[in-house]
Image (cartoon, rainbow, N blue to C red; front, side):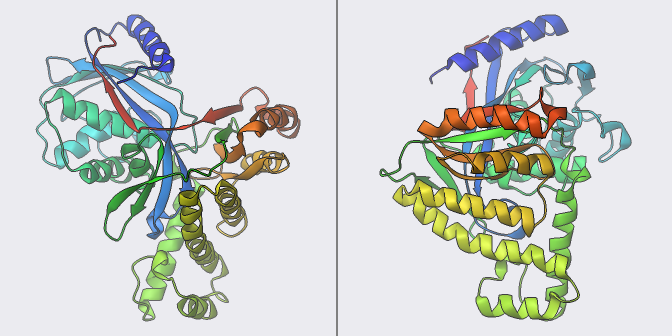
Length: 414
């Protein structure tokens, strides 16, 4: 397995951090988990739509080895102020308690809690050091971290879980049931199943993953992630939680009036859609706006998937842009800094499409950009964003990304 220069730099940083923290990881393994870039449908997972995206080369690396005891000790170079996270397996704070609300330790605590609830016998703790370069909002840092912790703790205990969707479910449960974040499964699926050189297509109806190569006619393009420099709170503290509740409320109302659906994505035909709007748009315009976005994004999804297969990246970009406008104006989950980045990107010739990424409010926006236009986009952002958003002039970043495998394990780097 190829070890990249980026992997080696990360291991050098981890080695330095381990010495500073006084934690021995010599001879251990390194697990690397990716970020993700959703091409469609953003916010579709908890609404039941099909999903498509790629793993991207911003990562979390965790160096770990069995501790020889039931103790877990983890230090994160991204959250050094939290110090060493230490606990005994099976002895973690209660779910959603106040003592976990403001510390990244809620993730290893939650992994221990959920694995035990699922019936795994964990006896071997780990000593570990974490380092990552995933932006703080929009590329699924929390899902990447959770998956890394689950896979590493199972490995340290000699447990190999063959059911990958069980891993996905448990990663979601860490955030839903322990932390209180109402995330869906999009992030976990797009990271765990990501394969280099392919798009990952997921159909929730049959719970299957299919790998879709980009058509050979595709012109050279880049995935660009524009981190606004804003700090996004957890999903449990964001508009994401409100939007999810609104969608679930509308589904319940539709069910009570005779619609045979389990989620908004079940409304697929024009007739049912128009009937639902006629009944509910008057008294509940905000709720039906959520339906409007999901209905049209789902229609666009199939066109986008066909365009990907054909290598028609301009159509993929056009649909990506249309989804972004829908997220901004209809789903109403974007934010001012995110839209500033989108406005800048949209004005650059060669930018094929742009929109906010992830949970919304703050974090990062993304763009699909012709390769020859990437430098122009970076220059445009460097020029315009600090003028428009001076409070974040020294905090924003532009990341040029490529599709990668979601999970890698190295056992010879330490």
